[in-house]
Image 1 (cartoon, helix red, strand yellow):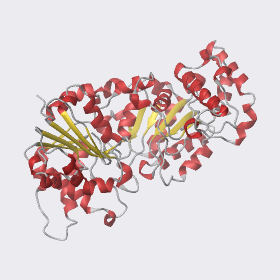
Image 2 (tube, rainbow, N blue to C red):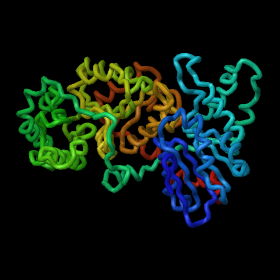
Image 3 (cartoon, rainbow, N blue to C red):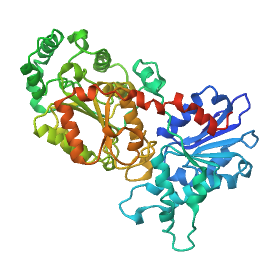
Length: 511
């Protein structure tokens, strides 16, 4: 049954697992949905969720609502919840739940939440986490970094108390703790690209993405179709000389004349190109967006449904030039450190190196100024720019890319809890999980040699300084095959649901 503020599921079979999620969105939602899709778990689980809004209020008061939403008559043995829930308050309000095997899952922890000044830290959030751990029977973290950063911060965190500071709490909590990685549903990516996954249906974008529309390219757009077909012919017949390819890269015409928006700018339509000249996934997107244009111009449907949310995905850069394709798929905020990423690309551009870049991810209230600067300076390199409203389009950009870059300053693996306030942080999937998706689609990852990354990626994928990030990207620009020849897909399968399934079964005491 459903209610305004919570959603519950009930089954005809005996349910002995109580799944709770007070902040049902982002990777919190992905984890719960993954558990409920498993045929062994779903019949035995009773699910109660609250919408993924107003994070700080969910952390403070969700226990009160959940105490009334959980059935009084039940056969529960196990309780599983994310750490957003104040478990102490729930058990106090519902003493009948105290005897359950209580499992708490940490997607993130507030003891490591970055704040500019210590006085900005809300003590209550971290304090609630510590109390919940004391009440729980099993405490799970999505990475060793998350677990150790939490446990080693407890003592210093409690020093914020003016007096009567407890001692030794980390030693009490540690025996309950273990790492259970966030399960990746890689098969959903394959299904999504095939158009068979419900999660790939369009959703309203928070802000429209776009491809750059530099005015200096307007003069070459009229001749784009003939130039495109001529270039594709020489590529197919292996008759292109180095000058043709270099001219193609330097003048910015390769795959960059495709525009997003009102249709005021010329762009290739599906009936203007030879399907054999482009890769299958790019052609599919081209046909889809051309169809959308026709419907909108003919006045079919509501304009809000017809407009293209997110940037148009151009034909594969890998087929159109030898340029390395770099993707940065993160939320557009300062904690993702876009400045370091763009400064590296500015240097590549100034040195005349050939590369293509896609900058994806959602935007919120304030977008750092560096994005507008980068869109202007890198306009001849841009492949896709902005939020992808369709998962399938998002995956196609990743599939077309060669290198995926992280410059994040704060990452646990699960929900990338970062931004100006904690509320924003639980509204997106993890930067690590995003990169795992990209790696699954054969992108080479470049990540900071800090935070959670060393336990996820091999050392050759890590950089320790911004200068080293630049050098790695420079090497890939000069030798694209170095990135394209390296596949790490086999090394990330350890994070798949299939590989982690039995561990989750064990923690849920299903055996």
